[in-house]
Length: 214
Ligand SMILES: [Ca+2]
Ligand SMILES: [Ca+2]
Ligand SMILES: [Ca+2]
Image 1 (tube, rainbow, N blue to C red):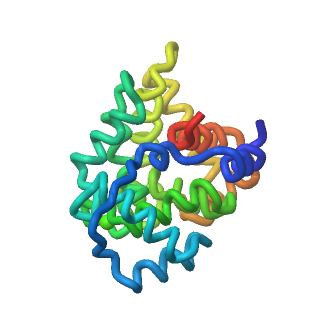
Image 2 (cartoon, rainbow, N blue to C red; image 1 turned 90 degrees about the vertical axis):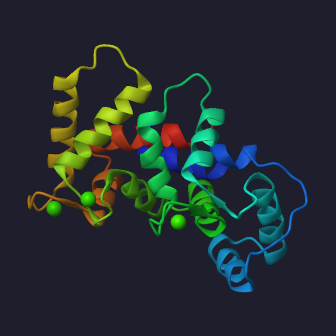
C-alpha cells in the first residue's frame, strides 16, 4: 500500500498501542494550567478531556512521568513474547522530546496525538527522531545502519544477514541524502518519504508497523 494511504489509515482508523493500556482511577493532579492549555491547543482536545486523560496517566504513573523502567514494562505489555530490548531506546527517544530521560504527560500526549491525528509530515517529523540517535538534527550513515540492524532484529526475518542490512542502509541513505553532503536533514528525510522512494518507504513503514496497533 502506498505510504500516504498508510498514513491516512493511521490517522483515521488506528490508534497508537499505548493509548489502550492506560487504566482509569482517580488520582491527584499536578498538571499546571499552562500544560493543560498547551496540550489542548496542540491536540484539539478540550481542557476537560486533557484533565481526564491526565488522571488516567497518573493512575499508571503516579509521579506524573514515565521512567525508562516503566517504559520497559509498557513495551513488554504491548509486545508480549517479542524481544523489543533493542528497539526500546529508539522508541523512548521519540517520546522523550526534551531528552531528560523521562516521558512526561505533555510529551506523551503530543506523540500520541500526532500518531493518531497528525498529518503525514507531522508523523514523519516524529519518526525522524527515531533515526536521529544522538539528537543532533541529522541522520548519519552510522545511525541509519544501527536502526536498520535493530529494526530487523525485532522483526526477526529470516534470510536477512549483515550484508543485506548494509545494502538496505546504504541504499536508503543515498536516496535520502539529496544534496550528497553525508548527512540526512529532517527536510531530506520527509521529502524522501513523501516521494515514496523505495528504501526510505520500506524503513519508515517498518517503524509505523511497530507503533500502530492492529
Ligand atoms: Ca522528557
Ligand atoms: Ca544524528
Ligand atoms: Ca544531506
